[in-house]
Image 1 (tube, rainbow, N blue to C red):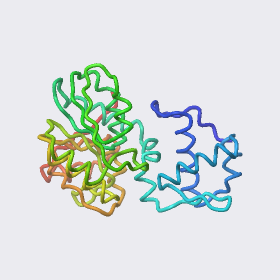
Image 2: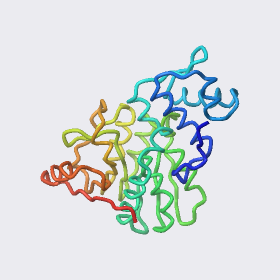
Image 3: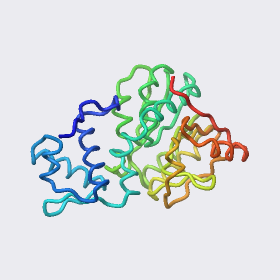
Image 4: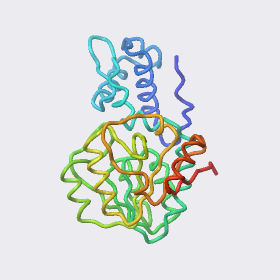
Length: 267
């Protein structure tokens, strides 16, 4: 039986940890019998079916005839359930570095970056702040936090990333202005940011255009991935924060292009 009780992720419930472990198992093995998943994770068939229904709704897998089958790895890697558990120490270090750029009284936009979820936990240290976001998880986390004025962006809700996106979201963003944008991306290639979702690109680009200053948060795995839709050039950002596991040659190549790269160290 798999033990999920000692998750290194401090902001994840037991259910979320189990769902992520199920997603990892199905992605690794291609397909797994549902009965085997119940036995492996020490839970009932009913609970596993509920977990699989949620994972299927988020586009991570398909449930058919007693089997859970993996979908495209690019789609899985875009899901917040999958992303939350990846490279946690690196993401925490990046979030800590990003906090240094936030000043009390600012307005900032936060996108659906799972790295930013670590940052959200620290924002009370910089209050008062106005936080603009399309991410339901961020809204729930900041709701009622003293000194934080929360602006929630509506639109069409996408379960796979726990965020609102689409034309209505972009229109709402276009009516706003912010001091700072903190965002991430799915992949980096040839000095460009890419994302697998066209709607995510449209929403992130709208955020990009209304912010005075822009900070990109990327862990080292983003340099190893591919995605379909171009989002922005790295040199369009004021700062790009990476973790210490990023290859030195990648860092030097980007710095030679005039990109301000900050290597985050866990404090």
